Structure formats: C-alpha cells, structure tokens
Image (tube, rainbow, N blue to C red; front, side):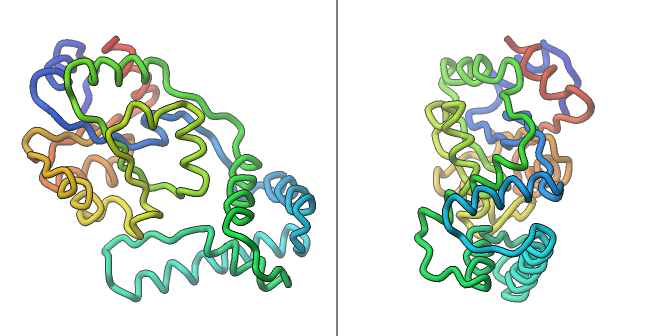
Length: 240
C-alpha cells in the first residue's frame, strides 16, 4: 500500500516495475456522479425529447432501467463465463427504448443517449493534481502504462478523450468491452497475456481495495492501494 513516502515511491516507480496498470475513476480521474437523483433523470429525459425518443415519466423510466440492469446482470452470471461478469448499458438502453415503442434506433443514437445520461448525472470531473506529470515521468523512464478499469465504454471513452489520457497510454481495457470486470483474474489476465508481461515487474494502482489491490495480488502482480482521504492527491503530488 502507498504510505506517502517520497523515497519509497521513487523506488516503486523508477526501479522496480516496467508495467503500470491504473484504475481510472478515483485513481486518475476525480469524479462525482449521482445516477439515481431525480434531477439526473429529468435532465436526461429532456435530452431524449430532442432526439424524438419516446419515454414515460422519469420514475417509471428509472424503475425500468434498474429492473433491466438486474435482469442483465443475473443473465450474465448464469452463463458462468466469468466470476465477475460485466454488462453493457447500451444493451439496457436499447431494450428499454424498444419497450417504449422506439424501434431500430442506430448504434450512434444509443451511444449518444448513454453519454447524455452520464453528463446529466455528473456534478464534476477533473484529473487529480499531478496525474499528467506523473504519467509523463513514467513514460520518460521507459515504463509501459495501461488503464484497466471497471467502466462503461459508452461514456468512459469520451471522458478519457476529454483529458487526452489515450495519448499517454499503451493500451486501455474497459470492462464493458471484455464482458468481465475486476477483481476477476481473467480480466487482469487478458491484459497481462496480450503483452506477455512479466508479473514480477508489473503493478496495479487503484483506489479500490477489493478490485485493485486484492484483484492485482490474486492475478500475481504487485498492487498499490490508494487508501484514505486525498490518497490519490498525495500519491501524485509527492512524486512530481
């Protein structure tokens, strides 16, 4: 775990590891969202009106979404392909919209609707101070940098592009694109295997003890848990 020691951090980032796997939200991006709030849903339904997507009132719409989410999660688990399966919210939106009489909606329209919901739910989003400087330092030292995140591609890719993080990464793995999420070892292994990483020279960094720290250890790599208030801030600012 990260203990806030600059000396120890320099050793970890410059001398020990070649491959750095980062979680995204709560680790690189500081974000606050409220997906259940009535304001979120009312704002989103106004957007759907601009796209001529029929819908009921927000309470029913919200109830239908969470009902379908539960259904999709249960179905994914019943398949038994992964210990921690992931679903794609775009499938839920398409299914939900169809029940309201919206047929043959394009993939582009579904993606736009998914991101519009994310925008409606989000109260702020920013990089943690020092993130880009820290990532640049790793790059300058010849390290490989990856994102391994439990995230929905429909809204996460736009947020990644918003900060230009894709330009700093060697690859980005999002759970909804792999139908599997952390802490499932298979999600870790998909990235480790693709680049034939030496596990002894690979570290996972994230704010979730279960998903990032325990998940990384279970996958056979080192892990740094950004634990406690302002841990991410301290982690980066103590390095630059």
